Image (cartoon, rainbow, N blue to C red; front, side):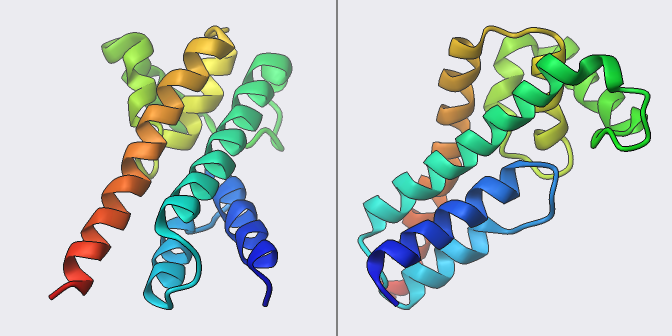
Length: 147
């Protein structure tokens, strides 16, 4: 498999994992690190870019389709919305640093769009949170594999 295909696969995995679809970009990143496929910094950058763009898709969904929130097909149910809104209510804009968390992270990015959070702040904070997660995973893997 070419390096471009590997990176495209990681990007797609990270993008889909950031949306409300199931996925595990962390597992994909760790598998690539374990097999020595690609440079760690490049893998982290690609995973971060895909994950942030997936979150931006969530933001756009919340921003432009919020009036469909009560529809059955809307990807955030009432309970997830309330939980994410509570996080946002408690931590404000800074809650976007937690967009990498399971369960609350993806709905939080939709809620940010619904609450019309400025896309520039959104990108900065979500990128910091998600890059931090991937950097932590890569560093932890490097420390573990060095043993």
